[in-house]
Length: 314
Image (cartoon, rainbow, N blue to C red; front, side, top):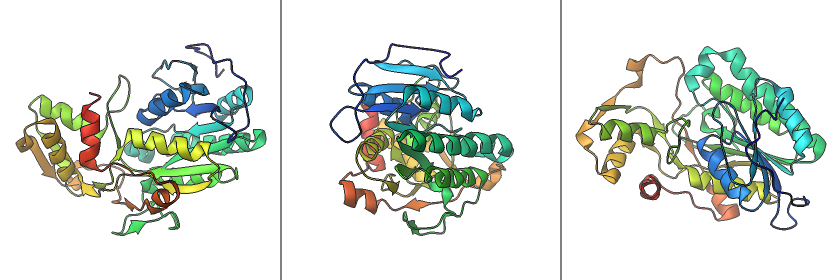
């Protein structure tokens, strides 16, 4: 059953139709992750909020928490039918690209089959669906990718995200947000971002080997949470890109991390990804976020600005 663990009592406020004021009734699927926890904390301050987790129990003031295994899509639809949210934020995913390549059947069940079920259920009850997708739906050929470009993933993770996007679009009232390399302060039980894992090595005086041939648009987690809140609580629908403006390789990024936190940059060593013999290919994708800026005025932080902000919270 979806309600195996109840952390706190849910706020007893009268639901309303979305867009008619400040108050919303929201469900955050995948609230134990970096963005999910931040988003849920912001929502729970004003809105009736329920959150889900898989193996990392969470407690968010003002929110009701449920353990949810996306390998069982029926549990997700049961929770949605019971809670009857106005907005469902679907953020949950296994963060390992290589796991998707090795465990394709399980990856399809979690990422695609569950997205199909959630999309159908949210459409049935008239809820808006906000889905967090990835830059990895694109192959990466040295160009800016806009929302109008056609996905052509080069790994199975990207293929499942592209298929999930198609499923989400079956609910006309949807928002898809593609992003890349999320980073921010790490909490217990959360996957460590590149910034956190690099800092840990440098702080311990260990060499940090990073791939020179992997390039990303690093995205500060607080910015992404704000984008999801804004788009989902407005009348906007469709696909948006929300990623940091800097397109940099991991070596440059690691050097900036060392400089920002006062660590020994000589410990940063550049390597080629081919030496790692990983099962999944990593495309170098540069997302264009012009649509987001033009329609909302939201500006995403660059790497240096994001690292300064992160220092305030660690």
